Length: 112
Image (tube, rainbow, N blue to C red; front, side, top):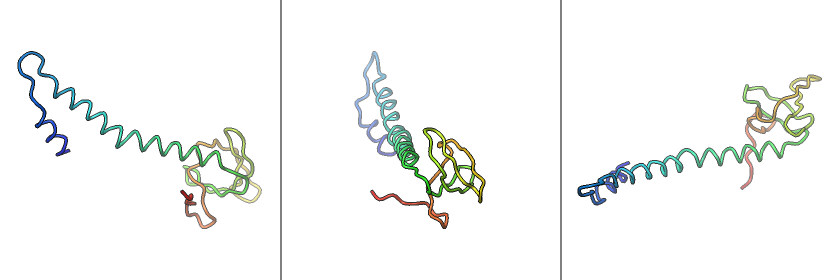
């Protein structure tokens, strides 16, 4: 933030008439900083989550956002049938799958 104020202090002040140039610069810089720190990382995370859900296959062990673990029984377009106990199969929306996990419950790291 100190850099932002230094830049704004170095900007020439408006003389007479309009005088709102530095305010406009500050608003533009605020939107740029918001995009870099908040919006861009969120969009990247959403893309990674969508890719993970598209790559689900039978036999994957998954963790739901509610904390329930299960094994993928079958995969549909928007839903997944998951076995949560021996002989107990639930149909769940893909959006509730938080991550694909290993058998010990730790998240699977994808190679990049």
